[in-house]
Amino acid sequence: MIAALAGADEVFAVGRDTVRAARKDAERQTAHLAALAGVQDRVRLLPTRLQAPLATVDVITDLPGLRPIDESIIRNVCETAAVTLMRGVVHWRAGDVDVATCRRLSIAVAGVDEDGVDAYRYLPMEAVWGRCSWA
Image 1 (cartoon, rainbow, N blue to C red):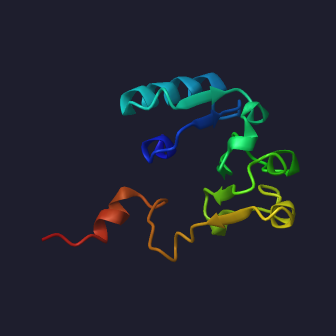
Image 2: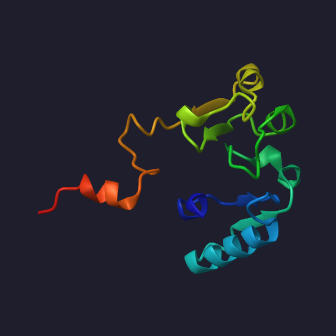
């Protein structure tokens, strides 16, 4: 939804069954959120990552439905594409993204150092609120 809300012409949402959740549940939730956000016409739900028209893809996320971002994906994306490390650079694993192929094909790979920018994403809300100052 974030990409669509930010103005992306088209977003391909890919899910897969895991031990924690079913792909169909993720698709229903994604479709519901897209409708609530008014971007349902720009979000396409796909059952597999290889069904996306990769030649038109500019940003690839390393989220569970897409990982691993391997050569089969990288060699088919547009030449200006970039890979985002959605779990941050601290949690990146070599098996998640084929960085060597990205480098060879000049595909940028980047992630946020959440600790470096004081992102409190993984802290309980009580810990975050305790760091806020109120006027």
